[in-house]
Length: 174
Ligand SMILES: [Zn+2]
Image (tube, rainbow, N blue to C red; front, side):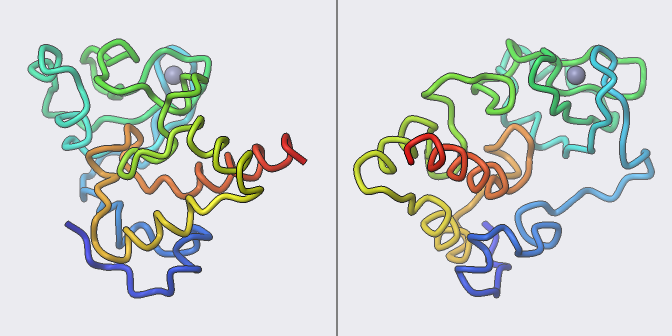
């Protein structure tokens, strides 16, 4: 449980909090900060091993190696986690949840900790004309309830995605 965010809820909601010292808690490893996805060539950031340990399907978790893994953000690429060392990568089918950036489905979570799916965010906007998702998530983060490092496939805070998706959805309804 994180209880690190001392900033006001509004600052957290706007994704202006320092997630490196909060949800992220990056492992200190000597591996390069970024590596290229073997399939799409996308320059990708490090992801902590515990993210893979929690999110890979149980039968695939045994294949996790003691290497630095990276998370590919390319929507059209099937690779989710890979290493720059010579070990197998993990694809969307190996992950036990749907990966937001790689799956456009309505029931895919934008926020994995508090279950804000695309459909739930859109429904609230349709019904009320606005979204309370970011603010509600920020309150939970502040209360120390978020676990993005093990629930979100990207292993980081979801608020950037939430704010971007809300903005898109608001434009589509206006
Ligand atoms: Zn890729």
